[in-house]
Amino acid sequence: MKNIALLGATGSIGLQTVDVIRQHPEQFKLYAIAFGRNIKHAIPIIQEFKPKKIVVQDQETKEKLQHRVDGARIIVGNEGMVDISIDRYTDVLVNAVMGSVGLQATLSAIREHKQVAIANKETLVTAGHLVMDEVRKHHVTLLPVDSEHSAIFQCLNGEHEKTIHKIILTASGGSFRDKTRDEIANVTVKDALNHPNWNMGAKITIDSATMMNKGLEVIEAHWLFDLAYDQIDVIQHKESVIHSMVEYIDRSVIAQLGSPDMKVPIQYALTYPTRLDLSQTKRLNLSEIGQLHFNEMDMERFPCLQMAYDAGRKGGTMPTVLNAANEMAVELFLREKISFLQIEDFIQRAMQEHQVIKSPDLETILALDQQTRQQVISYLN
Ligand code: NDP
Ligand code: MG
Image 1 (cartoon, protein in one colour):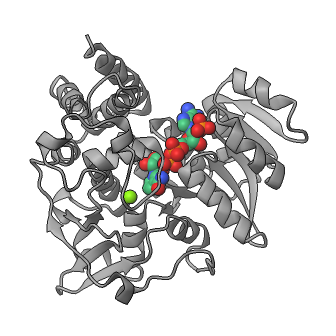
Image 2: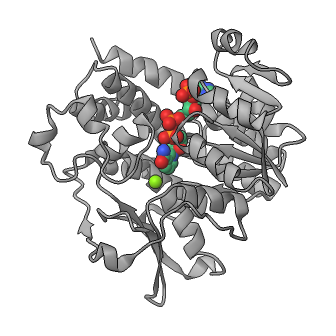
């Protein structure tokens, strides 16, 4: 029996993690949860699983929740997320919070030798060197939840690092994959939130439409698998059946396939190195699908992908700026303050105005994250 602390329990990955736990009550126990403000989604989870600790984003949410739970301790804010990540009864941390706010909890859990399943890619983009330093120091395996990285992780199973030629991440293309740049100039938030293959949280759905999601995943892969950027390729594959591939030096290519269902990589991160049944997930039926399609990525059509490669190659604090500017710009787009194409303008401007600091420490990263968000807000005027 593994005790799980779940950050971002009320989100898309969080709710699917809850569903995986529900399917295997003998293996997993939901020991603690953290969420932001979504009490409506949290209450049924709390009633069903009776977690011992509950973390909420602010005091107001705590007050609203307090009289509706008994037998659980409610903690507020980032300290709460760190608390449940390092709790002595926590065996596994599932980090499914949205954004760089998940960073300190990840670092703390690794230092306490917890098993960490990471969906929270912004953590690795904003401070990948700090996270991986701790991983090496404490001999912890960071288990990827992102479907592409779970695929690569599975394709690498039992292979020798030195025999990897490159990895190939697949990209569905997002909500506007068949549209030209002229056609996306005036798209609405509603259009952008309509993803063809995956039902995900709002921020990552917008990231998929701008292709920044794939850019963040390139940086995530660089850190998780210790690969140079020249060894990380992206290919458009609209069916999302091949979740990613590894090409070895002998020209052999290994791919991982499956129905597009995040419960598969979530569960694998919890059961690794073994596997369990996942009965409610659709089996892959290739003859039903018939054809798979692949296209080269067009960096001019999707400049956010190019910006992410540039930020990753520059290194130091540039990925921190890329990530924070993107988080803020996407938030402004979701609040209908800026247009879809202004997202990339704002990120580009923040990157151009930034002087890279090499090997930043945690304090520098946290300060720069906040500063970049303020800077992006100032572009509104
Ligand atoms: P959602 O927006 O659906 O959920 C985000 C979760 O984080 C919610 O539970 C939210 O709480 C919580 N949260 C946000 N801010 C805070 C905060 N300051 N303190 C505490 N909790 C907070 O996101 P997703 O589930 O889509 O994505 C989560 C992560 O997983 C992201 O990093 C994303 O890139 C990654 N990912 C997601 C995939 C998907 O299919 N959705 C696929 C691969 C990766 P509340 O809503 O209660 O305020
Ligand atoms: Mg992904």
